[in-house]
Structures are given as structure tokens and as C-alpha cells.
Length: 238
Image 1 (cartoon, rainbow, N blue to C red):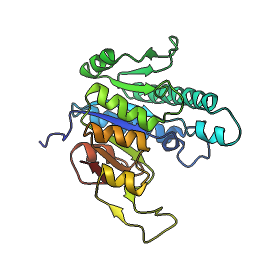
Image 2 (cartoon, rainbow, N blue to C red):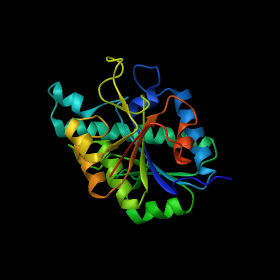
Image 3 (cartoon, rainbow, N blue to C red):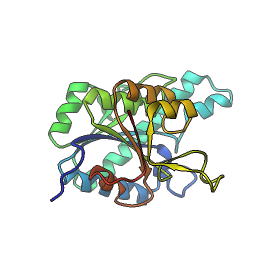
Image 4 (cartoon, rainbow, N blue to C red):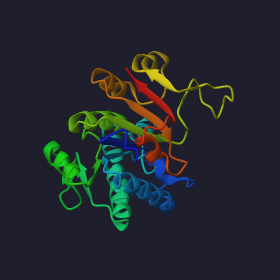
């Protein structure tokens, strides 16, 4: 039997991925689909952590453009990630997957505080660790959280699940001639301003030689395909 290509990974989910075809909030069918895919990967013996965004509920930077104080808006966005993390935890545990939610913002009744060594121990025990609350600081995105946490826990790769099947030279929805890249260098992402992850996250990955694989969540089973080493989506590496 073929072995997984990675032993420990960080799955980065955007908040928008949870809303499915809804304009706002959480599509329960999408949530269950993600939970089942994660369970399938866990059965292969892969250690998985998840970083989840909050854009389906509130996006800090959007609030700031409408006149809100940026720091306050970002803290609201961090709270939105906690809501999504708790929803994913519920879906996973109903599918028989043991989980822990760790929040960068302490809220003892809902989640553990983020403690690096404890997170690694949970992974070693076969639990899925869901990182919520961003980095705990305003002005940083959940992309940066994914890069930071992946480096801290010694993950081998960031799997960034999106609505499109990779990274394109321009918006494929608006430009039918947009080119999809199979591989990219970190420096090319930064120079071309490609929307893989924000510049801070990309730079962190570049400095620590942490690969990023961008792929579509729309096709069920794609998480397993990436874990097994199939060439789907776009890989960003040294």
C-alpha cells in the first residue's frame, strides 16, 4: 500500500470555504464533507492541524475599510474564527475524530489556550488540533497564522484549500486565458503579487523552506490526494 507523502501537515481553510453556496455563515453539508475528508486522512496515520479563517462571518480588513478601527475589526475577525473552529470540532467529533481547539485568545470555557508543546502532544496522540483566534494580534491574517503554527509544530507542508484548483496568473473567473501554475517559487509569488497567501505568510514560509500546496476544496477527496502525493493544484517551494 502506498504511504502518505507527509507525516504532519497544517490544513488552511478559509472561512468562505465553510459557507458553500450560502452568502453568509456555515453550510452544514460542506462542514460534514470536510470532516469526513479529514477523517479519511487521519485513518492513514497523518498528524493534522487545521487553521481556519472567519471571512464567512466577519472579515476584519473589510470592517476597517468601512470606518471601523482596524484593531477592533481584526479582533472581531479573530472571534469569528473561534465560531468556525467550534463548528468544525463538532462535525469532526460526530464523525469519531478526537479534536482539540486551541485559541490564541484565551477563553477557557470554549477552548484551550495555544501552547506549542501541548499542541504537538495532541498531534502525537492522534488528535486533530484546530487553531483559532488567529495569532492573537491585529494586523495579521490567518494565512500568517497558518505559516507561523506550521513552523512552530514542525509541519512538513501547508495545504491551502481554496475555491479554485491552484494559483493562476490572473483571476480565472474574469480571464479565461489565465494560466495555472503547477509550481512556483516563493520569490515569484512575492514579485508577481499572486494571491497565494499574504506577503508576511509567504515570507515566513520562504525563510523556513516550508512548502505550500494550493488546491480546490470543491472536489471531495482532494485532501487525501494531496496527502498521498498526487500532483494537483499548485506547489510553492524553494
